[in-house]
Length: 140
Image 1 (cartoon, rainbow, N blue to C red):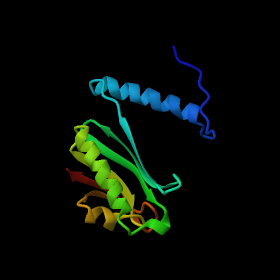
Image 2 (cartoon, rainbow, N blue to C red):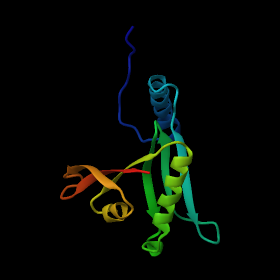
Image 3 (cartoon, rainbow, N blue to C red):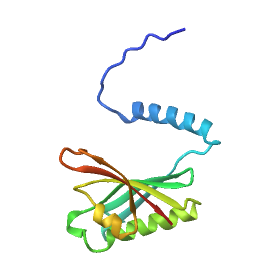
């Protein structure tokens, strides 16, 4: 039986996005021996408890996948980003994941990641226009 579906662009909301994420997570788990992503959030807070930066990622299938790293502009180039990455790498090893994968755009932080020992695995020219998107990896 074929379902009658209405396929349309809609404003995203957490509940609907969650349904799609749960479906994909369940499918992937069925193919990956039941393993599901173990999410990681590392916060950089000031003395008032305000988040000034952080890292978002997940460990899964032997890898740490770093999806977001950000630091308040006034706090950049002071070692905080490196501290976030070091803590994430240490946690990945603790979770049994000795490899890291991340992506960055040409206007973001390629030299930062290379300085931390990450190697360019692939480069996609023209993303963004006039720039490139890099996929980087590191063995811990």
